[in-house]
Image (cartoon, rainbow, N blue to C red; front, side, top):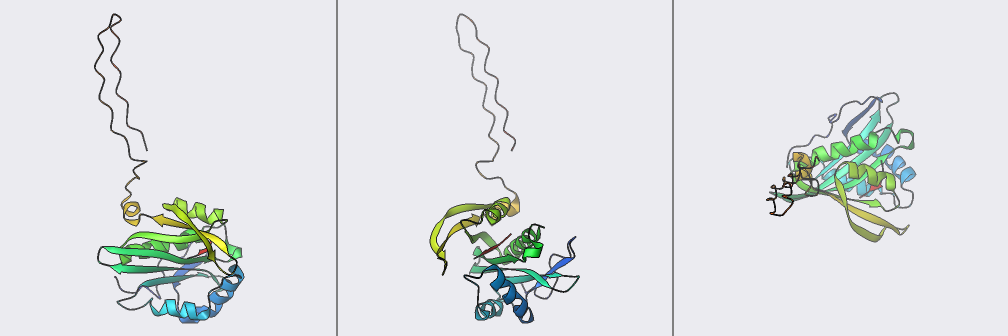
Length: 219
């Protein structure tokens, strides 16, 4: 695992005047307020965030949490977190949370936060990244699919106390980072020409075929 990037501005300032930086304890009051607004049924407690941040610094860190700060007024308008587990060549990432304030939804901030988490997954050496998203949150599912996440299955009653189902999704991080196409998208090798069949018409041999060309949840 690499050293901490907390306190830096990992993704810079975007066109909307919003910058990303490592989440610190003094951000928790604003983060908790946004958490309760966005996830009223299953909001994380202060203790849960404290526990996550305790593992987000130092040479043995296994978490990466960032906040999105609006330059105009200094408000925290989003946050996201990733957990990494494993060692050596078998490290797995898990998107713990991505949250965007209602005022900033639909402006690409969710994609920026996810991009930052995936950058951290590369630093951690993750081979794959998992997440859970509510089955009725189609907008978030489309965002994750754009980043190479594929559905694995349904976890019934995952979100409590609302008893909402979760869709588990997986990203082959090694493959996506290398830009290798999926097996279903890989170009097919051209077929060899078929030998002409002897017949009274003297049919023309078949021509060989050309290769084909090829914002918000809790974890």
